[in-house]
Length: 519
Image (tube, rainbow, N blue to C red):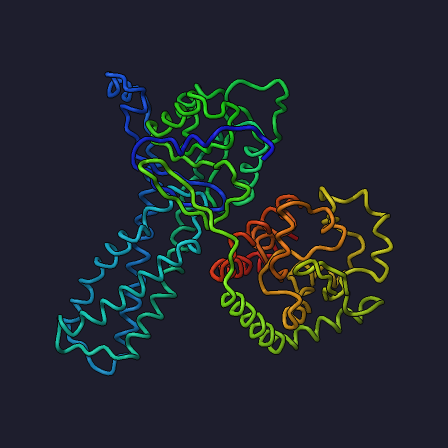
């Protein structure tokens, strides 16, 4: 936190504030008291009429997304009913089929109550993965109600264990899958949402780069606005200054802006910044706030209110022994099964490495593990035999800042090695590291000693957990993340660790590896 800034303006909005912590942003959806927002002027209503509303296309985008998600849920329920009918041992009368069809709107109402249609406009990352807990609630609650209500509504319907399991299993698979398809179709149909960042420093630059690195967010950052330009101000690359805070309304009208991202303004907590956020709400913009202390806030932060004042609850570092035991049991079971099933693939990789280049099949490299204990990380060798000795010759080609060394088109990599790296096959031997307890399926990135030596302060707590085969750095794009941000991600992973977080990272890693992103 190198920038002296005030409190995030979005948390001072007057009225009902609802928000969700996501990837160190706070997305705020607020009903602003216009009279208060405009300084208690008697002409508040007249002043409000001078503001433009958000472009019609933005409203159409949100409405289309809601309808697409509702349609996905309807199709999911119908598919589950079809499975229930197909596995049923009895013939269901047409009247009872009508009752089943009539119950479909009840699922939509229930999902509406679970906020499964209202989350997307408020957040930046609209991944279906983030709403899996709510989908699970919907599936379990709806299935239980169906099981209990069916014999009451009709004495001719007897739903047995096979039918209800088939129904629940189909719904649990279909609902998140179809919702993801719906989001993808809407994103490809509509242009990206246009956003403006409030800020002119490092945080504004970082949040812009993160958003642009993920086109699946469906957000286009146009540029930034802020208070007076500082004497030491240097325009950050790729973040054009569009004007001052007072120019927001004109910029919105000119560029059809739909979202305002408050990222540590130079105006601090001054009245101009507060008025900018109030103006954004009156313009019907979506507002996202990067909170102060974001470096120590993770995705597990809890939003609360104390008599109208919004607070953020930060969980402690406590990790229960039982959860860690479950994590270890999952590691052992998964690694053992994977090593057995992938043995033919690993054998083929070993033969290819041996036949195409001189040197050992396996490459051993010392890494720093849990509690700072070193271990030998195993990989299939992907470089020429004397690659480590040649490192100094190519240091001028290093593309990474800090202690890391990375060349995207490294001349030391063999032809087979390039293929193995592209598909992450070179990392398969690390399953043995997982099996023997030196690594975990998910965890902080295992660093070499020189990289680990560059880490100081609170970031050393990344060694509290076993390093992982994958982690937040892998799930978010691997080598595209600078070293300092990778260490920050590892710190937040340790601070927020949970079994659910591990599962999310495993799921997110699948498309990264399958599509060879980050190589």
